[in-house]
Each structure stands twice: as C-alpha cells, then as structure tokens.
Image 1 (cartoon, one colour):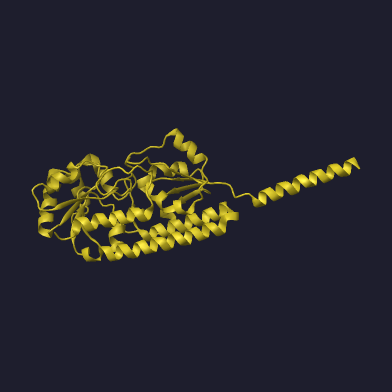
Image 2: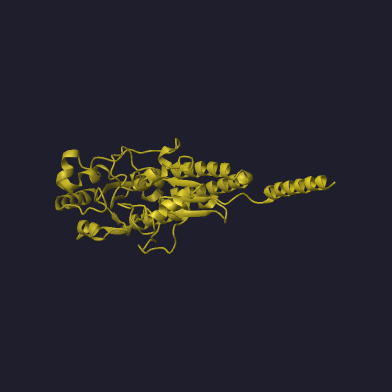
Length: 331
C-alpha cells in the first residue's frame, strides 16, 4: 500500500508539472540589435517581458565603434542577435558568428533589396581622384564609404533606410520568435501583421507627402539615404564627403559649390552626429537651406538628442519625411 501511494504522489507531481508548463507563458527572450533603427523595427513584435538591447549607444557614431566585455556578455545570453550585416556594424560580425542559430543579418535575407554604390557626378570620385580629393591616407575609407567599415562593399550598406527592407527583416525576426516561443506563435503572428499594416499606412502617407518635392535637387553630408530616396523618388544629387568623419578638401569644396550653383541645389543636409563645419564650409555665401537628417533616429528635427534608446521605425520615417519636406519646399 505504501509503495502504491508513493507512485500516486509521483504521478501527481508529474501531472502538476505538466499542467504548469501548459498554462504558463513561454519564456521571455533576449534580443540584441546592432543599431537603433533595427530596434525600432522589431520592438512591436516583442512581449513586455522580452528584453531588447541596442549595442550602439544613442548618439555614438558606428565609425570605429568597438564591443566591450559587457556587450559580449549580452550577446552570449541573447536568443536573437540582429544586425545589418554590412560594414556599418562590422564590429559585431565576428562576435555574432559564434552564435549562428541566433544570428539574423539583414544583408543575408533574400528579400532584401541591395542598391549599387552611387558613382559619378559629386557622389564619388574615380579611383585615381580619391587620393587627391580625400587624401592618400584615407583611401580605404573612400572605398568603403557606403558601409562605414574597412572591407570593400559592392552595394550600398545602409539597408535599413528602405521600408521594403524593413518589412523583410520584420518577417524574418517574427519567424524566429515564433520558433522560440511556439506557444505564443499565434499572437506573435498577429502582432507582426498589425505592425506591417501600420507601416504600410505610414508608407502611403509619406509617398503622398513627398510627391511634390521629387524634382527638387539637394546634397547630403554623406550618401546614407539612397534607399529612402529611391523608394520615395527624391532627387539627391551628391554628398559632401565620402566619409562623414573626414573633412572635405578645399578642391572638393570648390567642386561642390560649383555643382550646387549649376544644379540650383535648394537644400544641403547635415547630420547632428558630426561637426556642422562639414556643411558650413560648402554653403557659405550661397542661397541654400540647411536641414537635419539622422540615419540612426536618435535626434529630433532640430538636431537635439531624443531621450530614448531607439525610436519606433514609423516615427523615424515620418521625421525623415518631415525633414525633407521642410528643407525642399518652396519659400
């Protein structure tokens, strides 16, 4: 009898454990992303108990960024590691490769559109001109201006600037999350579809908002916005520098000023992460407006830091659209 009662107690424990596992919510997941815009894309897919970490601190340039031991510890404990997968976050690639099952790189997704690096005009000088215009010591940077790293990239590395690429990443991360949290797969799928529908509405709104300014020529500090420009049919005609951390040479400034005058450039965009002198030296004395663009989404339209680690992707897109409209609209 005593033996039978012991068996019954053990069976009761097993049933109890099974019942608890069935009714308790799936475990929370730890997600690490390289740059703030990626966090803004995937945050709506997560539960309130999930943890989302942005490795690149707000306001810090990705140029020359290096992971700290604390970052490596975070990666070790991450269920998902999301990156752009281009030289913009090359500082993450080697560490992320240690966790292939957790790694989601935007550049490796088949649905992601990759545009060629822009050449010609005032976008990029020919090989033999780079030494003269940017300095022989910056030759490697000139080769890699599309991605901010140290390896040659044959497509524009600013993949996150495209709403279509954002959709591809959202779907890929959603699929991973559903595999990690099988019991919540239905709710994750519902959140995914709701978020994509909301982004579609934002996209339509921006398409209509920017339609009147498609022919207005402008310059940017560096060529980080091609995907956004192509998507909304804007008319960027050149960049001030191949690398925003490099001051343009006097000859390049003169060439830019001549191109601006001949092309009737209406606006020049600076970036709040970099010294304003990069732009002021080019526009001094010319009748052009100066606007603010932030490819990382951590500054507002006035160039002031936003007190958040990241901004929702739709909110950031709308700010970019407002920045273009404000600077390009006729007086």
